[in-house]
Length: 251
Ligand SMILES: Nc1ncnc2c1ncn2[C@@H]1O[C@H](COP(=O)(O)OP(=O)(O)O)[C@@H](O)[C@H]1O
Ligand SMILES: [Mg+2]
Image (cartoon, rainbow, N blue to C red; front, side):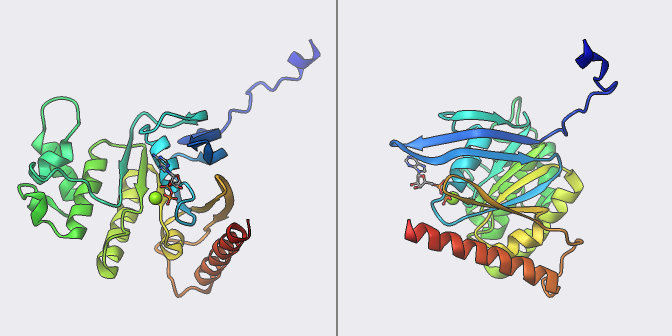
């Protein structure tokens, strides 16, 4: 057949994806919070997700994490994935290292926990009880717990939201370092436009149940917030969020 003759010798292979979501809908009490959403993330890509409070960011993250399966549509994610939430969610009755390996198959392996803790600068706290950790330390323990899963996809839901400004900067640097070292794809939910532009390859804005806007961040790393191009990207995203808020109010 003519179609066979013209078929290329090497068929075009679609680029591999770490995340492929199509037609995703999640409804609560008859109201679609996610409504036909489409999202692709490349392996190793760092994507930040912005959007007004209540627009469905955490719902999307929970779906990608496999914590919510009451959905319609297609969701393809790597088998190895891990999630860290705004609250570190450490079990107070288990020492830090045991928290890190909690839920992993097999016997709790202290060496594995301590390697991950060292990677987040918390090697010296492995024997500590969670209540003795500072906010920043607890958040790092939560990151270590994600890292021991050796994720191809790291899902972060406002992980720095509860930290003070200085600790936040340290934690942002740490995530940037871990991402560069590990090479995993990251989807970071944040309400902080500056944080998104500082860390991500691509910034998405969620609104009305879909990805309403996307912005590539084509700036060298480490990024300089004093760079006029940084300021321009931040301003354009802020405007985008402002416009979205206005639209939402008018609706
Ligand atoms: N388990 C649930 N039951 C009912 N409504 C929910 C549930 N989880 C989330 N929602 C609703 O879905 C919307 C999006 O929530 P969420 O994804 O947490 O928003 P965001 O993380 O963007 O602030 C909100 O209106 C919230 O009340
Ligand atoms: Mg949320």
